[in-house]
Length: 383
Image 1 (cartoon, one colour):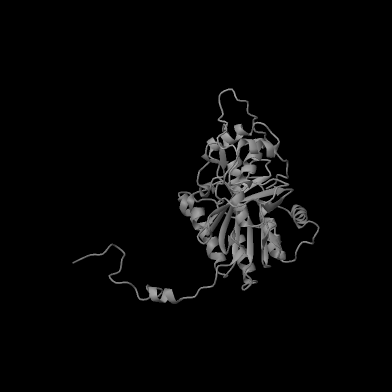
Image 2 (tube, helix red, strand yellow):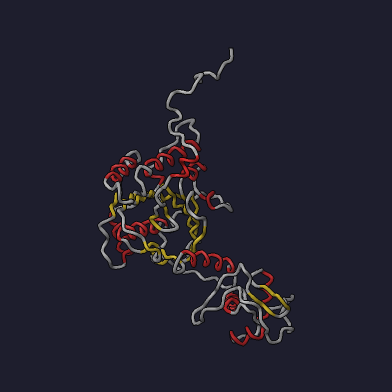
């Protein structure tokens, strides 16, 4: 007699396939559009904001929460619709929270639409969120939990770490998914190990990241005013956006997400460059039809631009279609400085330039080059 695996019935129990649908049914469905708490960055569902300690993540989520509660601009530039907000600030007291909120509101009253909880036992938090969500079933609410460590239970003896992490993440996801259009944004720490993949920055096993609908990773050097927010998710276009921060306020570096994404490329292109190199690169970028060292000298009031043009060419930041003429490359984004107008786009054809055959200024041994200057901006450095 043929035998099945131990414990398996000979036939499937009635009802096990009741939820199965075919392709025709799926093709005929009309699902609601994805809801966004912050367009392009924070969609509905369960997500993580990950950053090292004291990077400013608590200030960031507080700013997002206040913007959503008031119906203002998140990160200073992205319009958001008003919605109820629950902020579980479990590492702060009311005094600190009031001070932080007042700073972020810049003189405006703290909106009534944000509810705050500062004390809770880890086992109480899911029940608190569930009860609060029940009060706002049709309002696309936003819940912010700061931090995951305050609700994550200790791993039981012999329990698999991945399974434990996925279980807590899955529980939070199931909780927020009970209310259509709702978002649960959870603050979490990064791991210490460096990785080329920003998702690997999430502390713990991949169980936490794997259970999340979206992940935001905030990277900022200590005491730096500039940062990058990396975004990915099941329904979120993966991208990186440039941010700036001062006094606790986080702002998109540019008028919109497109500009902020371009700003990231510009920063990478000018990283470790001195002021003179940045000025030269900006001049070429404003004149994509091509420039010569003589033109650059005249425009910037210097005499050694050929050194910087050659260095930027070798670095890959500039192109040199013919000897003595430097142009932008497709990977170089616009670099502007105060006082300069808008330039033509990078597709502008190369035109005739005077002195095309002059020395293109290759850097040779013994050439004196001004080293890059390091500039740091002191800012509030609280988590």
